[in-house]
Amino acid sequence: MKRRSFLKGTLATGAAVVAVNAGLLTPATVLADWNKAAFDAKKVDDAIKAVFGTATTAESGDLVLKAPEIAENGAVTPVTVDASKMSGVEAIAILADKNPTPLVCVYNFSGPALGYVSTRIKMGETMNVIAIAKAGGKLYKAEQQVKVTIGGCGG
Image 1 (cartoon, rainbow, N blue to C red):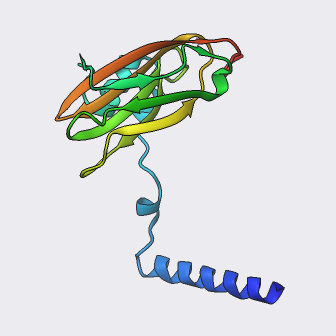
Image 2: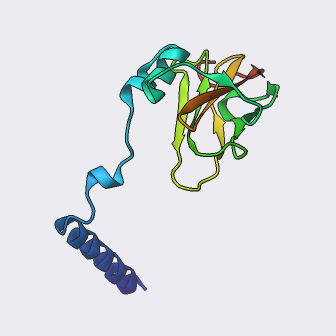
Protein backbone atom coordinates (compact mmCIF):
# COMPACT_ATOMS: atom_id res chain seq x y z
CA MET A 1 0.00 0.00 0.00
CA LYS A 2 2.83 2.42 0.80
CA ARG A 3 4.44 1.70 -2.54
CA ARG A 4 1.28 2.74 -4.42
CA SER A 5 0.99 5.96 -2.43
CA PHE A 6 4.64 6.72 -3.13
CA LEU A 7 4.22 6.12 -6.87
CA LYS A 8 1.08 8.29 -7.03
CA GLY A 9 2.82 11.11 -5.17
CA THR A 10 5.87 10.87 -7.40
CA LEU A 11 3.77 10.99 -10.57
CA ALA A 12 1.74 13.97 -9.31
CA THR A 13 4.89 15.87 -8.39
CA GLY A 14 6.47 15.06 -11.75
CA ALA A 15 3.38 16.28 -13.61
CA ALA A 16 3.37 19.55 -11.63
CA VAL A 17 7.07 20.12 -12.37
CA VAL A 18 6.50 19.53 -16.10
CA ALA A 19 3.54 21.97 -16.09
CA VAL A 20 5.59 24.68 -14.33
CA ASN A 21 8.54 24.23 -16.69
CA ALA A 22 6.26 24.33 -19.74
CA GLY A 23 4.77 27.63 -18.53
CA LEU A 24 1.29 26.12 -18.15
CA LEU A 25 1.20 26.70 -14.41
CA THR A 26 2.49 30.05 -13.20
CA PRO A 27 1.95 31.82 -9.88
CA ALA A 28 0.22 34.73 -11.64
CA THR A 29 -2.50 32.40 -12.94
CA VAL A 30 -2.79 30.35 -9.76
CA LEU A 31 -2.92 33.05 -7.09
CA ALA A 32 -5.89 35.34 -6.58
CA ASP A 33 -5.61 39.04 -7.34
CA TRP A 34 -5.17 41.16 -4.20
CA ASN A 35 -6.57 44.70 -4.08
CA LYS A 36 -4.40 45.99 -1.23
CA ALA A 37 -5.85 49.54 -1.24
CA ALA A 38 -9.42 48.24 -0.91
CA PHE A 39 -8.66 45.89 1.98
CA ASP A 40 -6.49 48.50 3.75
CA ALA A 41 -9.23 51.18 3.59
CA LYS A 42 -10.61 52.20 6.99
CA LYS A 43 -13.83 53.82 5.70
CA VAL A 44 -16.65 52.23 3.70
CA ASP A 45 -16.62 54.84 0.92
CA ASP A 46 -12.84 54.54 0.52
CA ALA A 47 -13.13 50.75 0.20
CA ILE A 48 -15.94 51.02 -2.38
CA LYS A 49 -13.96 53.56 -4.38
CA ALA A 50 -10.83 51.35 -4.31
CA VAL A 51 -12.82 48.37 -5.62
CA PHE A 52 -15.11 50.02 -8.16
CA GLY A 53 -13.46 53.38 -8.92
CA THR A 54 -16.38 55.40 -7.51
CA ALA A 55 -18.44 55.41 -4.31
CA THR A 56 -21.65 56.68 -5.95
CA THR A 57 -24.42 54.11 -5.41
CA ALA A 58 -28.16 53.89 -5.99
CA GLU A 59 -30.83 51.90 -4.16
CA SER A 60 -32.46 48.98 -5.98
CA GLY A 61 -35.23 46.61 -5.01
CA ASP A 62 -33.58 43.96 -7.20
CA LEU A 63 -30.61 43.74 -4.83
CA VAL A 64 -31.58 41.65 -1.79
CA LEU A 65 -29.33 41.42 1.29
CA LYS A 66 -30.24 38.75 3.84
CA ALA A 67 -28.56 38.75 7.25
CA PRO A 68 -29.94 37.96 10.70
CA GLU A 69 -31.33 40.85 12.72
CA ILE A 70 -29.53 39.41 15.74
CA ALA A 71 -26.32 37.43 15.30
CA GLU A 72 -25.75 35.17 18.29
CA ASN A 73 -22.09 34.83 17.37
CA GLY A 74 -20.37 37.64 15.47
CA ALA A 75 -17.57 35.30 14.40
CA VAL A 76 -19.85 33.44 11.96
CA THR A 77 -22.63 35.74 10.78
CA PRO A 78 -24.42 34.31 7.70
CA VAL A 79 -24.93 36.79 4.86
CA THR A 80 -26.61 36.23 1.48
CA VAL A 81 -26.66 38.70 -1.40
CA ASP A 82 -29.06 38.04 -4.27
CA ALA A 83 -28.74 40.19 -7.38
CA SER A 84 -30.01 37.50 -9.74
CA LYS A 85 -32.94 39.71 -10.87
CA MET A 86 -30.43 42.26 -12.21
CA SER A 87 -29.00 41.80 -15.67
CA GLY A 88 -25.28 41.93 -16.33
CA VAL A 89 -24.02 41.64 -12.75
CA GLU A 90 -20.26 42.14 -12.85
CA ALA A 91 -19.36 42.09 -9.14
CA ILE A 92 -20.73 41.91 -5.60
CA ALA A 93 -18.93 43.30 -2.55
CA ILE A 94 -19.86 42.84 1.11
CA LEU A 95 -18.79 45.37 3.74
CA ALA A 96 -19.22 45.67 7.51
CA ASP A 97 -19.04 49.37 8.40
CA LYS A 98 -17.52 49.18 11.92
CA ASN A 99 -14.99 46.41 11.31
CA PRO A 100 -11.34 47.55 11.43
CA THR A 101 -11.23 46.89 7.67
CA PRO A 102 -14.78 47.35 6.33
CA LEU A 103 -14.33 45.40 3.08
CA VAL A 104 -15.12 41.76 3.81
CA CYS A 105 -15.09 40.24 0.32
CA VAL A 106 -15.53 40.91 -3.40
CA TYR A 107 -16.91 38.43 -5.93
CA ASN A 108 -16.37 39.03 -9.65
CA PHE A 109 -18.69 37.45 -12.23
CA SER A 110 -18.32 36.92 -15.95
CA GLY A 111 -20.57 35.87 -18.78
CA PRO A 112 -24.03 34.58 -17.95
CA ALA A 113 -23.32 34.00 -14.22
CA LEU A 114 -26.11 34.86 -11.78
CA GLY A 115 -25.27 37.44 -9.14
CA TYR A 116 -25.80 35.38 -6.00
CA VAL A 117 -23.40 34.80 -3.08
CA SER A 118 -23.75 33.28 0.35
CA THR A 119 -21.01 33.43 2.98
CA ARG A 120 -20.29 33.94 6.67
CA ILE A 121 -18.60 37.08 7.88
CA LYS A 122 -16.90 38.15 11.11
CA MET A 123 -18.30 41.12 13.02
CA GLY A 124 -16.95 42.58 16.25
CA GLU A 125 -20.03 44.53 17.32
CA THR A 126 -23.47 45.69 16.20
CA MET A 127 -23.12 47.36 12.79
CA ASN A 128 -24.50 47.76 9.30
CA VAL A 129 -23.76 45.11 6.71
CA ILE A 130 -23.62 46.60 3.22
CA ALA A 131 -23.92 44.85 -0.13
CA ILE A 132 -22.77 46.58 -3.30
CA ALA A 133 -23.57 45.12 -6.72
CA LYS A 134 -22.13 46.39 -9.98
CA ALA A 135 -24.52 45.78 -12.86
CA GLY A 136 -24.65 47.51 -16.22
CA GLY A 137 -21.81 49.81 -15.21
CA LYS A 138 -23.73 51.19 -12.19
CA LEU A 139 -23.40 50.49 -8.47
CA TYR A 140 -26.39 49.45 -6.39
CA LYS A 141 -26.52 49.26 -2.60
CA ALA A 142 -28.46 47.36 0.05
CA GLU A 143 -27.88 47.78 3.77
CA GLN A 144 -29.05 46.06 6.95
CA GLN A 145 -28.19 46.46 10.62
CA VAL A 146 -27.09 43.31 12.46
CA LYS A 147 -26.99 43.23 16.28
CA VAL A 148 -24.14 41.10 17.62
CA THR A 149 -24.65 39.48 21.03
CA ILE A 150 -21.28 37.64 21.31
CA GLY A 151 -18.24 39.45 19.92
CA GLY A 152 -16.56 38.14 16.79
CA CYS A 153 -13.46 40.10 15.90
CA GLY A 154 -12.29 42.13 18.83
CA GLY A 155 -14.31 40.74 21.73
